[in-house]
Length: 433
Ligand code: DLL
Image (cartoon, rainbow, N blue to C red; front, side, top):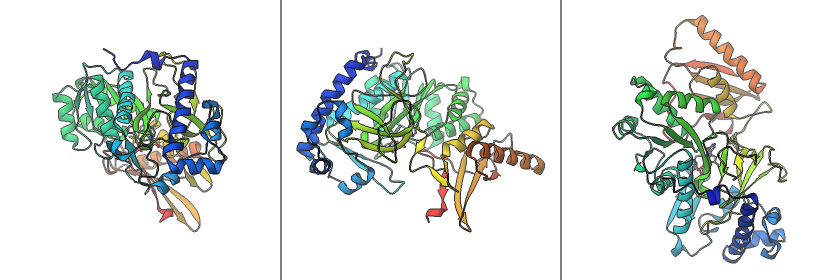
């Protein structure tokens, strides 16, 4: 039974989607003007009033909202409804020092969970499935969002939260879990641990994984799929916009459909703010058109991706976004060259290394240094120095051709790089200290 495949919405014509967006945007702009003084002041400063917004074509007239605005308005300054109508907050991990608190009415939670239910359904989930949610529960949106989606689909939900790898594996095996939701780095870790226990993909009951919350490469997808014997689907979202489920992958596994009945997506040039045509890489900007407690208009995500409206074999018509290549604030500038950690990951995985690595950036004599610590698999591990230096050279060459930079590569023993149970921390930038 596929209650959360909603073809009347998910395969609607472009005209129908546009009509929903027009109507909902006009109402949302009126809502923030009437109820959020912070927005009204920003709009007044930009010389726009709700009367100027007659359809989604007028979206570009509205000012952008940035993480800086969220910080200024913290904690209550962007709330659009009386607090008595809010039933929950969620918050970001604050790893970049910019904690965000998002507010939800019951209706906001319902639409968020519906988005997550669509994602689980698109990954083949039904009420026959056992869905283990190994994203963190609590302030992080991963656990609560997928938990709610799993309930809506009617899966038997196993709310393990993150961590305690032995127990995770025990539940997967004992309860015959068929769907696993967690970060891709934790999925890789679980896969590695099961392999070490001698489990073959055929002995693992999982059939699908719903992995997101951090950038992961196609190579990493392939490696997780092979180890766990599953299909691995990407899911995207951010706390500011509700959490996971803003966009999700379908059976085509080639980009994520954005839930366009709830969010309008634009891609802009991060330097000029100019709106770019579909198919061009730029910064993703979202407008939430249905959420009421924490409505965000033209929110700059800092995520870099490309939008595509090409016909999808799954039949869904909602616009697709590519896997975010990284964030504008993840991008490292090393000796003047732009480097995304995901590019380094691609080189390592293509050469057969696991996705366990650390990127250390420093500065010596006013020159940036790039050190990459790469973990070997147990099969690669050797004390043959000739073999190690051959491997190092191969990695240095691979990185040079991908990045145009010479990196120092250090090969380290299996399991010596700390594993992540949530979002992996791969970059240490000592230049900022
Ligand atoms: O990470 C929400 C989430 C939970 C998404 C579980 C998917 C699964 P935040 O902690 O607010 O929310 O972080 C949001 O994470 O702006 C992206 O930079 C990054 N991100 C999220 N999903 C993906 C993905 C959650 N699939 C930030 N690929 C976003 C790449 C992702 N990056």
